[in-house]
Length: 492
Image (tube, rainbow, N blue to C red):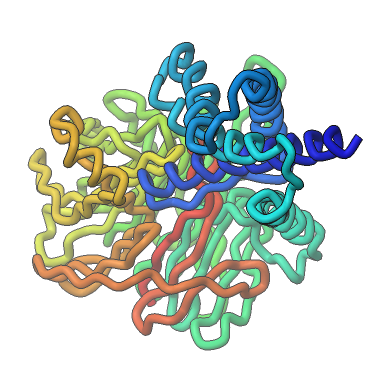
């Protein structure tokens, strides 16, 4: 009876220890290869992964216990031999049948742990290493389950907050600074401004805004309400721009928009405002009277995902798209003729556009994608059809360094680079922010700061630790890539 109890206890400890070894091995490998500590996306995913690891380790532990019990009747097996047998038993099937044989290495520590524990079941009580393994396994398991559970609980609390406590959704699309306030808008089109000194919020627009832009004295907003049409031919739609200056709003006339021609971005030039649609751009004056002039594009542009735009001079309009894991494009539109040019060499998501103030024909474009551990990004300077990379930071975690040191094939591929998710103008250059750092590029000179942490302000994750910029976290990229929250940067 006692022996049966010891066997059951040992089997349970081996089961738990091997499952923990599997999950921790995968987590450690992921961190070593990506520098991102990833557990699971939520409580449900955590439970599923835990169940898979537990079932796999239970089957391996049962088979191992059977082999060890039979072997002990013939000749006792040393601990090192049991550990070796357990490692091979767990790792070999995966290495043989998995499409990636090296995945068997994840199961090697689990088999070693199970072999060491189960080899001590014959005639010895479960104490010492066995009890320690049980305590450590339970602790690790609680941590692995408690962290995602805490995330899920925080998410539920966030969703349950009142409108006054959480003024904007997590999916911040963009914004601009005016005077002493930062104006932000989210996916539903709500606009809230936050004072730089104390982050005091003011709701400006309740919904329907698709873009914001400022010329330093006036804030401009594009209002293009969404509609969901079930008929084959939708009715005529309307949009308009509104402006805020001197403490009051000015409402410009509604403009007629063609079917499936909803504009989603605006850019400012000296002559007025440009609203960008997929087949036309609309040229509007800055006064409160008159109608928009529709300019047909030489070819349609796909305005999917998040869209950014910027003017270079008075006639060249650049429009970038961010479609997450599916990439992005950068278009140049000649407002004199409507001619569209798709810039070659841009296939990553375009996350920001800033005109080069010291070289008017040029502009800076930030690129960035983070998806399932893949990082890629840079900042390019575009002058006509010429592209020059001015910021690109390689990412080489310790695992990648070891892989490249041992494998000539691995050295044939370039390393990952930090994705750039936000771009803001600065004298002589720009500010750029990545998941790890904040960069200031000025006339070819680059300064780097470790990205400061965020604080909660009325449901907004924001950082005002640096005097010249404000950082904001957004979940908008997660709609089209497995990136989690990513940072945006705005100049004060």
